[in-house]
Amino acid sequence: MSGANAETRAVAVLGPSTYSEEAASWLLQGTGWRLESFKSIADVFESTISGRTAYSVVPVENTFEGSVSLHIDYLVGEADLPIQTEWVYPIHVNLMSLPSFDGDLAKVRKVLSHQVAFAQCRGYLARHLPQAELEAVHSTSEGARLLGELGDPYTVSVGPATAAARYGLKVIAPAIQDHRNNFTRFVLAGREPVPPLRPDGRGELSRKTTMLLLPGEDFPGGLHQLLSAFAWRRLNLTKIESRPTKRQLGTYYFYVDVDASIDSVLLRGAIEEIRAVGCDVRVLGSYPTYGFPEQE
Image 1 (cartoon, rainbow, N blue to C red):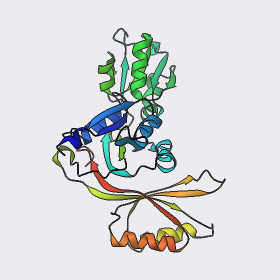
Image 2 (tube, rainbow, N blue to C red):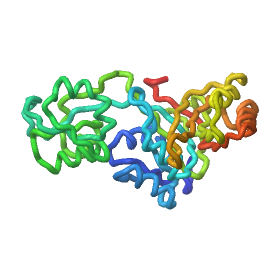
Image 3 (cartoon, rainbow, N blue to C red):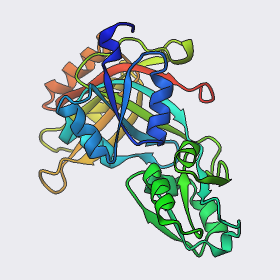
Image 4 (cartoon, rainbow, N blue to C red):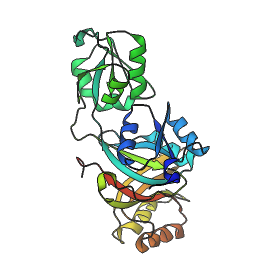
């Protein structure tokens, strides 16, 4: 991806110095694409919708916390930006403080971070900082920035080591996540197709298609009928999740990941069968998926 076109592509991330920025830097290494930081996921999406950036980087699922429902809802209902690429990135959560902190965790009064980061180290915080108030902010980087501005030695933050370096903090406890196998799934969403990226020189692991299934009339066995269209064709569903349509209480759509390309004859046949029984199908993207070396 050399040339002027590649060099001028801007990619929106939550940041700066966040896990999204780290993950995007890994995926896009060597492309020449420019990362542009925004304070909230809404701002990330809006920058791509408006054309200021070409793509948005969005975390959509974590190994232990599951789906990030707010971000999926943006993809489904607000952004209308196709998923172009997916990758999985390891998350190492660190406890950070001002350099003046004396190391006595019993004195800590407050912890600043994003709510998802709190969830990933809930056990550690309960054991070592039970007295501390957990204050959620827009991002892990925002928590580190606020800590630096507050100047309170007995307030700490949780986040990536890059945020500590950026805001002059020290890491007082590295890798405090409750589980070693802590990975987050990110997607790159935008209107333009993406050429193969091959981070670290590796090819893609697989192809995946994400779809919304919006049933028409509700009837007994309806979901089974939809799923059978995939089952008898031996198409693997790697994810299925129901989400409210927000149109009427008790109505849902199904968010589905299929381990197949939209170009597959079998997947196209399944979509036709599902539509034939009165279910609307919306394809959110068909894309390559990559894994980080620790996860492969």
